[in-house]
Amino acid sequence: MTSAAKAQLIRQLARLAGFDLVGITVPGPLARVAYYRRWLAAGYGADMRYLHRNVRLRAEPDRLLPGAKSIICVAVAYKRADGYVRPHPPAPTLATDAAPAAAGGEPTGRIAQYARGRDYHVVLRHMLDQLIQATRDQLREPFQARVFVDTGPVLERELAAAAGLGWIGRNTCLLNDRLGSYLLLGEAVTTLDLAPDAPAVPRCGRCTRCVDTCPTRALVQPHVLDASRCIAYLTIEHRGEIPAEFHRPMGEWVFGCDLCQQVCPYNARAPLGRHTALAADLVPAHVDLLRLLSLRSGDYRRLVKRAALQRASRMMLRRNAAIALGKTAATADQVLVALAAAARDREPIVRAAASEALARLRGR
Ligand code: SF4
Image (cartoon, rainbow, N blue to C red; front, side, top):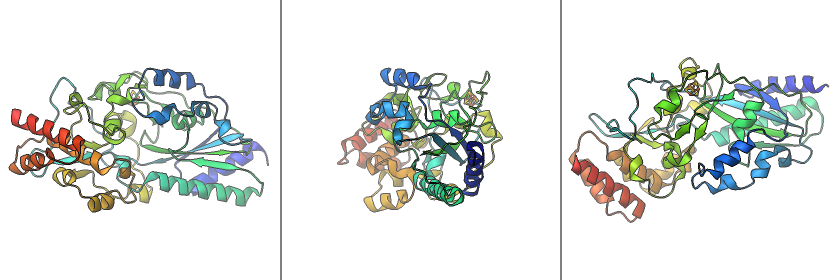
């Protein structure tokens, strides 16, 4: 079978396995590695030290598997009903007050779309394993394969762009003109010789909505994200105190942030994700902040069970809840009482966040 015929077969099998996009690239040195090194050197990776490890493996993905000849890149779309919001009025910025977390009723915090369904690491890995098995069954040709889903030292978006799945937008997400940017990515590095696809052509045009919308100015320029200012990093990856300058612009977000995707015009017309496990409502879009602040270990385990939410510890979710409560519209007694209790918590980081929130509410 020719490399083109094998590539075509894998495309068909990937669709049968449930992937929305599939493309193939060669595991040669990646053109954007120089950019990645400059990005790290500028400190934009914040304290995510793992990003500094194995840069050579990231740069030369053929090192991930002896004899690697091709990389199969796949994506699953996961857009939900609130995946697009017209970018008007402008989102709050560092210079202005954030919108209140609740205009009445129980104050709630928001969860990024990708974290509300089943843990995508598990779902996509299973789908990739199925794809590799189906390929073995059909080809009857011995080959090696190694699969990744947001795990190993792999520059996923760069590979996906090289494989023609889309281009890297100004918000630094992979963007497909039909499916938008709510895409979960995976890769299979393989010794199979497969005909590669052509890269997609960038199509952001003159749009700068994502850059203009980011309330913390994390997109320091188009295509350049300073992770230390990004709400997703601050709420999910950062384990220390969140600097006070970000508390107001963080708005209601307590796990991740979708703002730079919600305003992207390509997401306006993108269809909703159709993968059942990813579209499941394991975690609500809006979580009760008072309950999150007082989250006990058992409740935490139940909340994050089988969901990508487990990336944040219980302490981090409580810290994020305290910060979000500091912006509630109504200084209801129960909010003040809960924050006062959290200001005496055993966890110094929760204490600090709750104290800051209390001072903010009392100052108002
Ligand atoms: S909002 Fe505009 S600039 Fe940003 S990724 Fe989407 S199309 Fe590109």
